[in-house]
Image 1 (tube, rainbow, N blue to C red):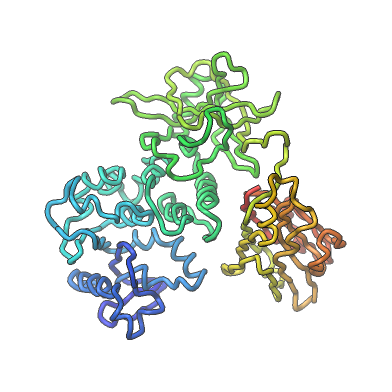
Image 2 (cartoon, rainbow, N blue to C red):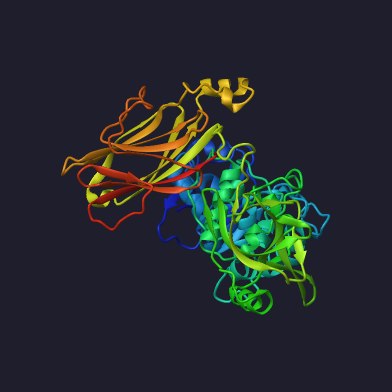
Length: 558
């Protein structure tokens, strides 16, 4: 990380940083950026006074270095930006002190619920949530750098403003784990509720700014949109958590009460009414299930698929509705001292005589007191099927592919040539690639002019969008991974492995001498190449020494 020396105003890079102070603030006009800080004109920029104020406060507190996001992150480097976003929570957590500079608070009088302090814009922003929670020592300052108070002294007021429990702010019962209160005591739904209503300049940051609070990491893909970013965040949380409160959300604008909807929330705001939802620990849930639900104990694991969610839940039919059910989640609400209600969601069977369901009545959550009549089932909660067809058309304006190379360099291969079409943006993260694929302008126009999807001309395609040539300088072996998106009806993202790149004007007719594979949103596909020129896709990886593999994770709208 880069730290700014308080006297020289020079950036220095550290692997093991010394003690430092860190700044939390609102971005304003003429902020001093990474590219500005070492230039003479920086002193004339409006944001320089804030840097000087932070450095002076750090000097008074005995620190020689500060970290300020405006000038300590090289935002022109996608790798540096991704590292900073994934490390931000840790950097705030590891700082010796955090200064919160409130430039819209000019009166440092006693803060209370109607004060300028409580109404500061700082409390409405997405990134400032983790900046409030992560530091152990945090102090607020007004526009003239006069101290207002500390996180500990203002904990009760801060809790009323932010909905973050005071125990999280004061580290009560945290012990050796600084974040025990946020990671263990409070459920996923509760932590999500803290982010409700917060805003970010870039829509994806509403999800990215929550990574540290849930202790997860994921690729940063600006351009994917808030929905995709938040979907990926939920997938990462699920990988390491049994907490079913992640499904305890409600969406008042979900449409008609009986409209089918998927199992995952679209935005953090869907958890607005879930702040009091608690996770039931696994051991308690197992004992309760044995005692009150039946001997068939619910499995604790669940997993996302390219089509929805595989999960084991107790179901009970709704009265007079044979295809509608209440599903009991392993979470609860506190309704009074010592009294809890379990939480449930409503499901509807979407395929006759199959354990395939979709969520309905997503505007509300069920409070369940009586758990009699529930029967544990292994079910699939899917994204709703389109009416009249079991397979919808691919009508997205963009899709993203994250390509992770595994076992390539170890076998002597390197990427010697990369080609992308104008409608494809490429970012590189170490040896991995992120592709943002946009619908060609011609096809966008045709789509807008057509009344329905079957009017789209099948002759219009985006052809190949990116290709990567892998070469072994010792054996002279070579193969090409080509990826793209077919924007015509029933199309979608695709992957091909060939001995050479297909001709751009012969995608549909090209002889694929190795393999090809159609990809689906959210599904991770392994494409493997064996020594000697054989390839397969969609198969499980083997442990054969002579196999090289390229893993493709696809996120797109299908």
